[in-house]
Amino acid sequence: MPARFPLALLPTPLVEAPRLSQALGGPRLLIKRDDLTGFALGGNKVRGLEYYLAEALAQGADVLVTGAGPQSNHVRVTVAAARVAGLEAVAVIHGERPPVALGNLLLDELLGAELRFTGSPDRAQVDVEIERVGAELAAAGRRPYLIPRGGASALGALGYLAAVSELGAQLAELGARPAWLVLATGSCGTQAGLLAGIKLFGAPYRLLGITVSRPVAECCERITRLAIAAAALAESPITVLSEDVVVRDGYIGAGYGIPSPEAAAAIRLAARTEGLFLDPTYTGKGLAGLIGEIKSGRLSPDDTVIYLHTGGEPGLLAHPEVAGLEALA
Ligand SMILES: *Cc1c(COP(=O)(O)O)cnc(C)c1O
Image (cartoon, rainbow, N blue to C red; front, side, top):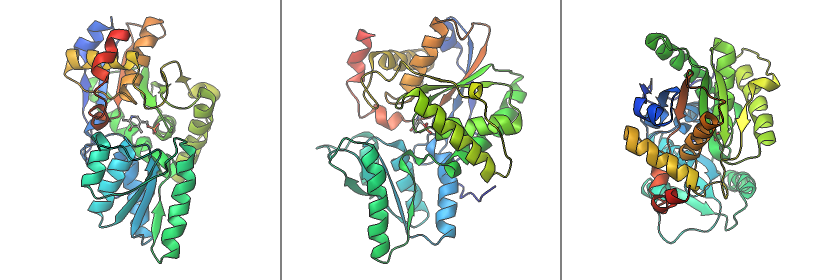
């Protein structure tokens, strides 16, 4: 395995959610609290970042360059990680600089990140701009280390490959044998790493991704490619079958990062049953998807289901409109 720079406080808790489970009419729900990865307000991006940071330091980098949207959890933890390692950080953000920095953007400002707004809503433009900023810094004599938008690459996926073994030990202790692990899928690195780990460690459950951003076909292609590449980096080749990659759509709503009434209802339900906060971009839509799967009967009340809480709570605080949306669900 490639080297890690430790950032996360592991293992993250695996907890029962009996009141949420009851409100949904079963299944038994276990929540893997990766919102509590313990670094810079946590979330799923911390696990992969450990590999990026180790590689950046090994290459003698002096500045991390990455990018995403204005409420990016990935950007927040990347900038914080740069600070811990004594590096500078530049983040490319799509769109215009908002008049007030809320949520993740507020934290980026506090961390002293250099934020470069593209001025365009086109998310793919961020990828081009990350490369351009990297070239600009290199030409100025700096040593940039580039991390792709959202942190999704084979190297970043290793964080969730390893998490499967962490989760396996917790399930053994509980004596639980889940049928499914459900998560919100964005740039697909998390689902890819989990899939590689499930194959390598022979985990008994299947993965169900709820896409919050990309079309299903694009997710499946990315997950397959990244899972194979992550396993290769771990020097354990795997093959991926099409039935290994399950991604459900129907929960994106008006678009990526735009809160939906269903997500708002799911956020409120999690808060009122378990005192648990979800976010409108990822984990709220993911839980809305899990609820949809229960309603459609694809998840049965007799199943045990793990929901991966991938974090993102700072983003909730940038979306006060969520409080009024639930009534529309
Ligand atoms: C990035 C993110 C996801 C999605 O993870 P990917 O690896 O991009 O698919 C889910 N939840 C939260 C809170 C995130 O920040």
